[in-house]
Length: 173
Image (cartoon, rainbow, N blue to C red; front, side, top):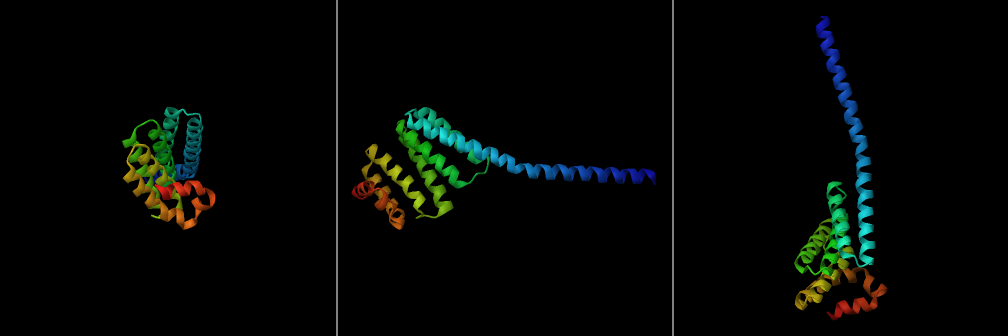
């Protein structure tokens, strides 16, 4: 009987320590999420600063890091979309039209899936894609992309109220 009792106690202790370890892992999950969120914000902000200094290669690297952190940290489609849109813009500045276009389309898809097709947050990304098309001589694509942005822009009148010249340029394209 003492052997059976010892075996039961051993199993009970193992189960108890396993449960404590599991609870500890679950409670530290928030710390990992904080790490990814903080690192994402650092890289995203550093990318913006590098872009302001016209260091597009460095900005591209920071935005690439932010995209990876958003994926690894499960930070959501929106954070992934914004970092992807920034990466697309600087990639366009570096002259890689195809990669920039692909990334803009990916960012737009992520935003549409998370926010809805005509959400105002999609309009700036569509306008950036339209500008990329225009700058590379794809004027028909630019017009179609700007037209796609108009419902979201008109929905809240953001462009008209805050940037009437930019709004006029979108309408003109």
